[in-house]
Length: 279
Image 1 (cartoon, rainbow, N blue to C red):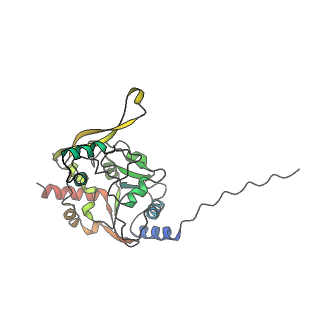
Image 2: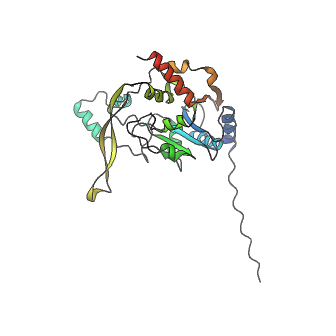
Image 3: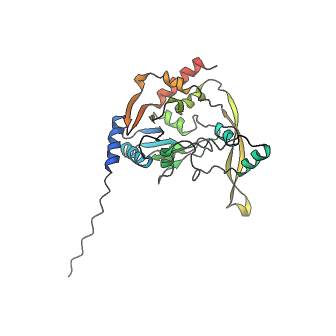
């Protein structure tokens, strides 16, 4: 009787590349720890860092209980944003109307982020990534809490309590800035929602709607208007300059400078500053 052939051993998992291991060590030195809920802002141009390699190094350090979050905003999906107004500059009324009729509706599954950098796109397009459904200020995430953090992002809460940013703050998230300064610190926006009676304004953007009846399998865009806090980042660099340096851990990853700090502490600082200085 022929003995059964032994079952083949499972193939070993591929070892991390030397470049990823080096980045992982640098991220640990910069303060990133396993299990963190970490929001990352980055600008990788000129740093020599590759977005996919950095993404994999981040998720590797955060481990199976950690979560990586990035802004995946689409500011051009608007009638009033600076990005949109720049696109229609010089067009007459007919041209503006035609341009807006051609604008694609936001689709969380496929619409690229705009101006958020290559790391944001590397996270958004990674297998298993989640993305919140806001048509202008969505977030993308990978990891243990990705689905929960991205769920329930209300239209009337760009960056408020009912956004992934608000959830991250309540749960003690951290912020890592790579090669960028406080002028783009999204965390400060949450403070604008916590000011007593914050100023409000109207927003408009294109969202996907399902057609009824026989056309229910088709989707098309529809302009929708809503009211939310009037967001203003013009003083964020000044707010950041006033953030105590003792609350910021500085380091380097690849060729880029980094800042790591507590999201709740940053929001509390911004709220105090805005309450005293904004009128």
